[in-house]
Image 1 (cartoon, rainbow, N blue to C red):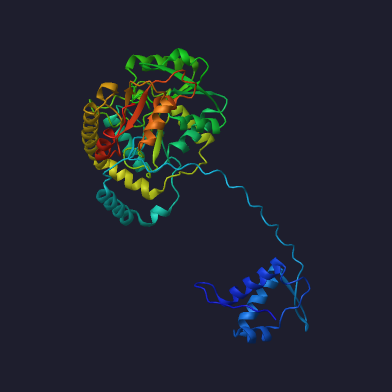
Image 2: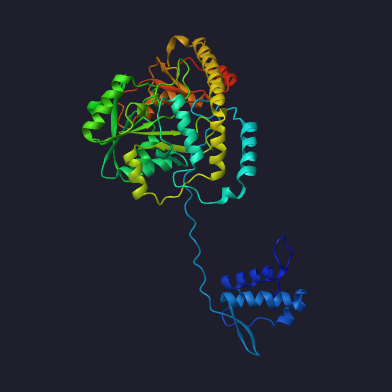
Length: 455
């Protein structure tokens, strides 16, 4: 006789509990192949459950092949191959978890998201569009958002943009992969050295050859692009150095693109946050035939708002429609309509102006704390009045790796400029990035006074 104690579990019917018990015994070998099971009446009486409960459990076991039924004889256990027990894999060595840092200078983010305005616009969109939000979207994104972006680019980036040449996508990662398919894997892509390492990884994962674009004090050097057909760079605010490419160098790079019959991908990431003047006109405004403009709202609004866009030259947009027009738009219509109203009603401009003042004030306070710190004579602040980070050059005999490790042990997490080089850096530059977008000023002041004298 099977002996089970069936206990009621929330959400688990009694018949399923019984089914699991019998199945477990069959798989473990406690019930042997060919062994006869108790009759439904006998088992229901023994367990003090209804006959229907036992019948439902037996029917499930029958359906899954764990038992068989012989007419007027009863139920018998089938020969079921037992699963091979998984070998317990050796646990990978756990990384030594560092304690939560007193100060993290590697984090970036945005603050003061306009929740009240955004939620109000969302309610309006729900009421005004209703079931239209459930319908299929145009491949390039909704016309309302593309028009709002075109108007914004004309007012703030000096770009005359046809909304029909704008393509909306869920984040720049998706758009990078789309460009690989559009421009072709047979081309060589050049990315800035030093630069944002994720771009290189995405291109490499996409199956294209990627080389380093050497830089000097004016940005990417055209003479280092002889073997490339595509250049991906950020002329308005390079990461991580903060360099702004002057107009003469931009013209030289455009001349390179024409001679090579190549393309320039202008990644305008972080360009909105410029403090000493208005953002420079986009490079695309100098040549709309050879420059692919790219930007995102993830930095200016919030990282979770995965709305980015491309402005393609007319020839490339035509090619996209012919060869890749089967792609569906990857951004939900609800978010697109909300952002379109946020842009067209001037909320985005107000938000950027407010955040510029906020970040400029914070940057000035952070710079002041560093300049008045106990080791001010050992540091030089290198800033370009743009973006949400700056560089600090440290006069120290320690290597970059030694210094970052010792700072981490003191509760300060920071990244060295040398970490953003793909090629061997050759020597320690003793430059470190200070991201202040989510910086706790009180924590910074406390950390500065905790630094040991070996700095």
